[in-house]
Length: 242
Picture 1 (tube, helix red, strand yellow):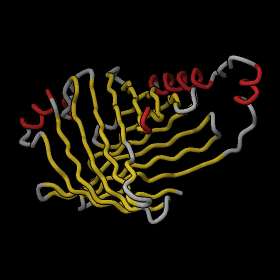
Picture 2: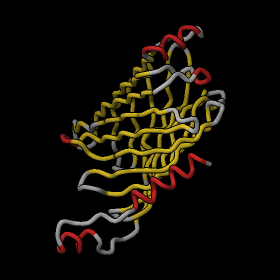
Picture 3: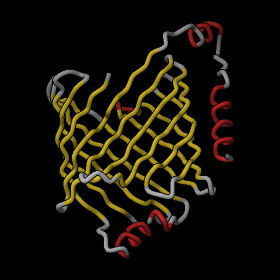
Picture 4: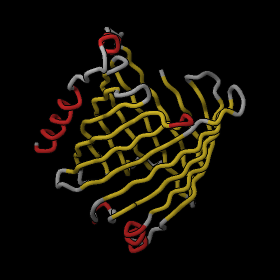
């Protein structure tokens, strides 16, 4: 209950109107905008590494206008025999604070692994220089533990339809979480390189490679349980939106 109240407080603060520098800007900023919606499946892919196979997904959708949006995110992976190993959903209020950046606040809930955990979320999402799509979010768990996730990706246009996308994700934790085999500090990093062919902007199959590496205490915990600290995966998938 406490974490829900914190998240609601963040939503109220984020929804507070922003004063513009002048009347003309205020008129443009608060003018009526159409309500739009989209759902984008960024990744729906099969990963293969060391004889293991998983199906991974990452998707997001939103409804709102150019200034205020209700944002939904989900990501996770399951083994090919049907067991979901990781799954999380996030419901966020997103407010535009500049031409390229939104501030976001809301709630995240992890369905897997167990025990299920709920977090308050605060972060930013937008486009950094050189058109690097970037997001940075902090999470506060029900027990007060802090964690964070930084993500960035960039599209390199090879031809009109062929696009190479490098990506990076870094996770951090303020404390050890033994039941989830997570250590303190930088817990893991993921580097990806995906090559997609856009039959249309709304539909693009791709192939690629993903390198994952657990670090520090998290790597020590993985080794203690007989697991490798890192692996290289080959991926095939599809990206689509509507």
